[in-house]
Length: 437
Ligand code: SAM
Image (cartoon, rainbow, N blue to C red; front, side, top):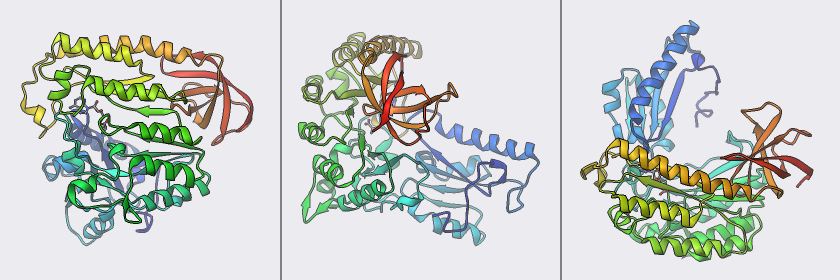
């Protein structure tokens, strides 16, 4: 959209006429980071002694993403430098905001949320990433887990029409993309959101389609060699998805299925809508698959009222599932969420202690999980040079593990086979084996 308005991208921040800060609010203190980053950029501009391309002393700053949505005009109050606040659904209206600025408005804002908001349709040729492309399939969330800010910052769940998703995937396949990721806060409820709001958006020949059916279509019609999806939600995840993954070679062996807690009492207080044993049933269905599917997840420790027994249930769940990877978060209250009204009862030191214990357990499990790959040959997409060693390439396996290996022939953007010779706590190491796929 900015190209259409005559803008080009620069890697020299001092030259920029416009700086858009995209923000996430799932962590604490997100707004503070925005002000700090603006000051950093202004210092860089000052130090360089340069003016922006348009001859100004400072770029125009805009804030987008969840902080923009949640803080809205409070951002203007805290910083004179911010001229534009663009909420999570306002991106398609960026040109109108820019026009208002050009007309001389001092500050512009659009934080409207609506059930019918449009998806941003991207032209396959305008993407910045070279080998992997991300495709939004749903926006927003209807789950209202008691700790989570997402429904408030990203609005109600909407599914993008299946034909547009499949069309975009096909265009990316034709352009030579090796991997696509289907994205949504909860991809498994794809197509179901219309039921709640009378707003059927994923109608295909008059029939609502499920996530499993969408996955089937994308796998069959896109021509993309590797397809991944995230995030799955335990209540909506079903075995049909595993069956479809087994049917198509290009559906990769990785499922991110966050449990958040191991105790039924805490799961209820979190309003997750499933019990520990229901979660385990879904995990067992994945483990029974004839494909060797890697399972990753998220866990929160220190939720209000979490007792030692509750925490031990989380520890035993981690041990039982044996995740290939796990993001562990210390609970922190988020504005407007129901849990923010509960007493944040677990002292910070205890949260840290539980976090470290859970992490230590996961590290041990992960070491075992990674060691299984020693001596195996895996397929890797060569994504770039390793940041740790200039003589190594880095990429991801089909099961989404980072793999590093020495550079042979120029293989950037190719699928190669790698013999795994070493493991670290969060990555595999190996040697390129023979030809590219
Ligand atoms: N919708 C996705 C899901 O349910 O997995 C992504 C949610 S969020 C972007 C990623 C993770 O952040 C969550 O799965 C949860 O573990 C963590 N998280 C969210 N709110 C949190 C909070 N208030 N305190 C600590 N961790 C939180």
